[in-house]
Amino acid sequence: MDYSALMAQADELSLLGLGKTSPNPIVGALIVDESGYVIAQDFHDGGLHAEAKVIKKVGKIPKGATLITTLEPCNHHGKTPPCSELIIDSGIRKVVYSVSDQNLVAKGGADRLKSAGIEVVGGVLKERVSHSNRFWLNKIVNHRPYFIWKIGMTLDGKISAQDGSSKWITSEASRMQVSKLRGQSDLILIGTGTALADNPSLNSKEENANQPKRLVMGNRVIPNTHNLNDGTAPTFFLQSHEISDLLDLLEKLEVNQVLVESGATLGTFLVKSDVVDEIHIYLNPSLLGTGQSFIGDLGINSLENRINFKIYSSEIVDTDLKIILVKDQ
Ligand code: AOF
Ligand code: ZN
Image 1 (cartoon, rainbow, N blue to C red):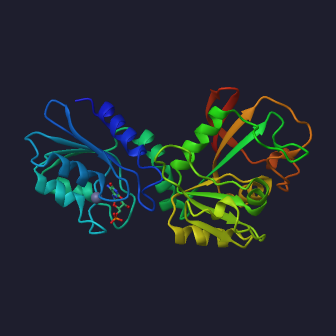
Image 2: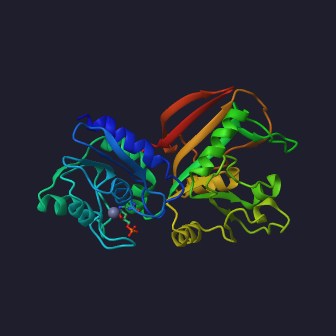
Image 3: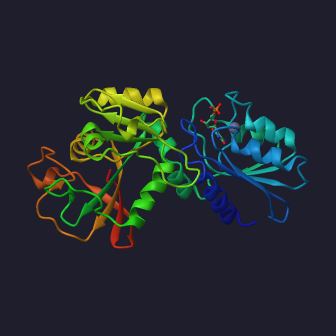
């Protein structure tokens, strides 16, 4: 049986849960029969665990069936009973998973299954699935959400012209991608400067999209008439310039991931605070010369002190170049 191909399918499914599962992970699961034919598939969307959903879908599990799941089944009584016990009771005799559960209270599912005589294979497509679940995994290790900073800029790094105009620097296709990313996000963070200058709604324009929480950081007051007060998503205002206040609030809001769509002030502050894990740049090949730069003074005066990122991927999107950067540890 081709476990990698099946795990890739489970991984794709898990991504459908992005933006819906925090503080929990995204998980995809399949049940296949003896010959590897998929008889049920599902993903975690904030309700039942993925394994429980597929087992329920199949009903009576046929002999020789295998469960394929992107995360090691849980072994604890949380919001739901342990998936390990459910799997044992269902009659499934083989479980293939990718990433080990890092959650101290829930881990241990693989050993429990083995002790019940179930054949267990772990680590299939571990790198790919860990990347898909990097928000949740990062939170367990760093005790804070994963920050993605999205920037649409000109070739010379400007996010608005001298007269303040900024609509639109990048192509419509790029903006559609950002709209999709919003729908997959837990929370969108901007500063009061961007809120007042752009009056953004920060909504995802995708059909039936999940609408992420919105958080505006800074001391200025946003009038009630602004789009951020339209009631389309839970919206929070943090009147502070302290990173600890931001992280405390994000902890309370239980988000795994934050999409930053700010201007230079907040972006620079977050980079200086060392919380930016990933940057999505949409680079439009145009020049302004003057205007507002996407980043401000980082207090670095020598090349040896620069902050390094690594290119994770690059792609041409209509007229623009999209570059995904990750922190260079
Ligand atoms: C999920 N969805 O499909 C799987 C999870 O908060 P609880 O009680 O639902 O437990 C969450 C833990 O269960 C989670 O941190 C992870 O360790 C494990 N597996 N969680 O939300 C799922 N399989
Ligand atoms: Zn579970």
